[in-house]
Length: 392
Ligand code: FDA
Image (tube, rainbow, N blue to C red; front, side, top):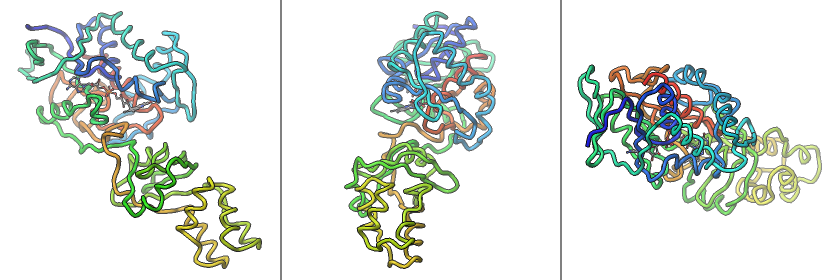
């Protein structure tokens, strides 16, 4: 069976659906082919089920890519305000949680429902449980330039949009199809790695610190020149929490990360000023700022080398730049996103079209663009999908 279309979109996630809506508005015959049994599965689990759908402070610096300028054009073409307008048009209540992060008051189901309604209104066909076997490309001026085979059905169209996302959470149906297609068509793919992911400590460090599982603290975590001030959480295998997820995207193994356990505080000031100089007094001073279990454990493992002012100053420095070398990350199974992907040098930053393969587009997470935590990854998906949707 052969189905003739104007646009075939592989992947019914955030980017693919946005692209479908925009192309549908232009009167294009669009089909979204989704491997899973339903669309938008990652949207549904995002933001703890409330979907952190954008961030008010979306700037190019919030994205990691081999070409940091690539995102500028798409982010300017489709802004957080544009997506907010769509959310408001559908009467979905939302709130700012912190740091410009916008969440649904109710549930992420409303965002998927909104995208589905928009698709329906412009005649987009959404096909779920479609297993793509093969993609072929023909001559440049063939109106059926791209042929997608899925079981007994053949979809043909002059435009093919790859929106198959990254490798994170394979249990939810992530596949490498997007990267494989890029390689099939001779495009460069920047090496992929798990990002926004908890870090795992080696056995020794875990023996020391993993008994603090569940303890969290407001810290500054740094790797190279990048740092984040947010909460850090000890886990049974290592470190997590927003500060650690953020730095994981920048961490280069085997280098250590540096942790300021008490940003802006002078932990040892009272002792240096002459009050009792012993371990109980020191622990009491640390407990003013840090959770008790963390203060006690950290000082048991990192005691001062004496009680002189110099020794206390050294300890102070250590607490503000505590270096710890993670062994690895929790991998794609626990990563929110995949860093790396289709090299942006292969794509137009205005349309996401491949320079070498006219008619083929890559959008969303499959591209070498990774946002910080906080709604930036969805904003990239909406913006890149929007840009391709104007021209496919
Ligand atoms: P996405 O992964 O959404 O969609 C790709 C689609 O392609 C999927 O539906 C998949 O099933 C389909 N597909 C894959 N292979 C296929 C194949 N071979 N054939 C057909 N279809 C195929 N971001 C954010 O900004 N705010 C947040 O709150 C969160 N929260 C969050 C929580 C968790 C647990 C995770 C794992 C991730 C987040 N994210 C996030 C990240 C965000 O979900 C992610 O960046 C976007 O969903 C990316 O959108 P895409 O459309 O590119 O891929």
